[in-house]
Length: 72
Image 1 (tube, helix red, strand yellow):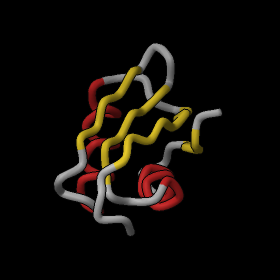
Image 2 (cartoon, helix red, strand yellow; image 1 turned 30 degrees about the vertical axis):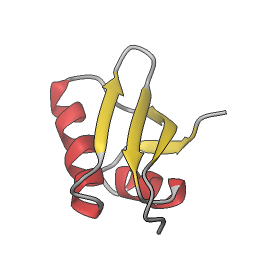
Image 3 (cartoon, rainbow, N blue to C red; image 1 turned 180 degrees about the horizontal axis):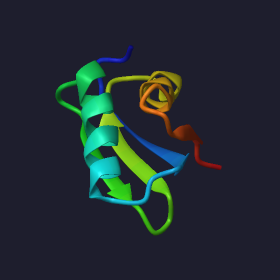
């Protein structure tokens, strides 16, 4: 885990509503309470400013039942 926040872009499948936005945000912030999470439902993309590594963020989102991976 880094001590300097970085902005990560992840593609996330399975999000369709505000409940999904809240679930993804809670999952990430459970790992990094200071993380800033922005969800774009239309594009299926999540932008996260965090000290976590991309795989840790993706794992947290995947554990909520979504399919997340780093954006290309």
